[in-house]
Length: 90
Image (cartoon, rainbow, N blue to C red; front, side):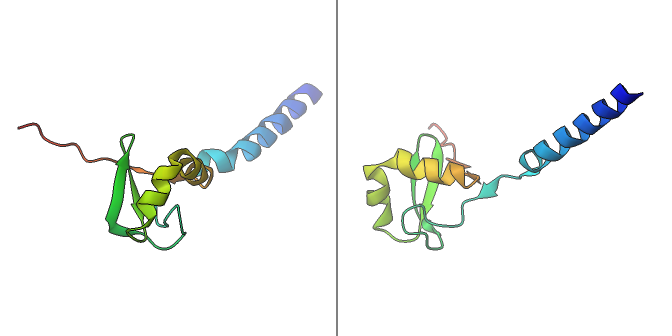
């Protein structure tokens, strides 16, 4: 009986510890990775199959200097980038 209680406590702790990570939903990009302003959906670049939005026309050039830096930052924030739209072959 004591072993059953220990097992039950262990399972409860395991579920509580992993709950937030499992429940976290992907966050859409709403802020510019360079300056942190609100994104303008007309200002973007497609990078490695993902679409990255920016707040102003100067930010894509800055992003391109070190894209991995900005991608890691967005990943750490739980941001899920949109996939690039597929282009139709003619």
